[in-house]
Length: 362
Image 1 (cartoon, rainbow, N blue to C red):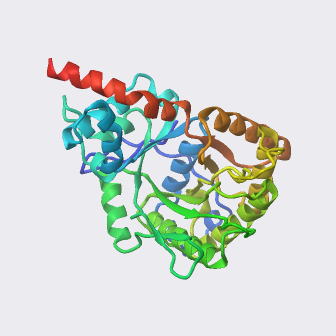
Image 2: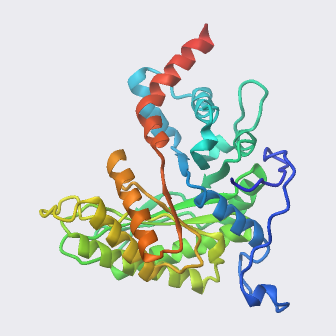
Image 3: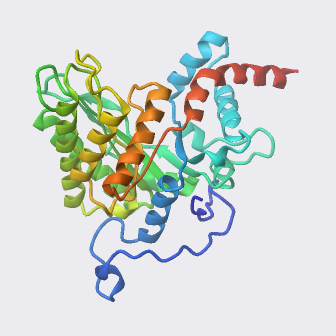
């Protein structure tokens, strides 16, 4: 189960934290020598416990961090006005789902959401989730922008003021963070450009270091889009190249790997690839696990996969195969993805919200 969070002056869990079991991080930590310099030193035990709680319990992460504009697009077809109160009710409906913690270990929320409370009792949403042993996460990036001089590629923004935002979110009850870097394999290329890889790896590493300095577990998310005509071999080679660069950048910034998680897309053939011979769970699992074993250090505790444009059924079948192949090859990480509830949320929550609104008006 997720570790209990410390009490927060601005809405975190009111439960008292249980003493975390001591973690072993090698002789540099445990043999009386000086703790290595690094942004995760102050919170190292908490960061490691949080990362394991999120990734290693056989559950998934609920992404409830849609922007106000995205929520409005969901409301429009059912005639629900995009107001702060309606968005709050939408979140409350999610967070009060019966037995939610049986399937969810973490929940990523939006800036507005982390400051909201239940209608009755005025329970802050971070506390509502923490009391269910669900770790609260927060989106901290400021979106992607075009990367000048590249072939239509992008980089992620948000480093300015990130430390202050992370410190505030920790006080509000968050214990992990999300930063989505988006890379692509341009038509005719074998991988994202060196410029794109370098820029996004650096941004992810600085984000991760800043999060750890403020007590948040960073989810490192170098998403390689599945758009393109490339085959699965090209996709695997590109993933290895990108992930290697990310972990080199994390090492350069002295990021504490035991207090991080990786959130990649699965290695799949390009969406426009003409040959679909390797577009099956076994081939995708083998390519994904092989790339992970070649590029990701064993110290990193867990992989939380993006569905990456796949259907719920395909993502579930691929994840199952990844866990089987990973066990066969001796991969050291826990693996999870967004559970079926996340898709249920997208398809059916609008109807439930409309019914809930009608109930509240009666």
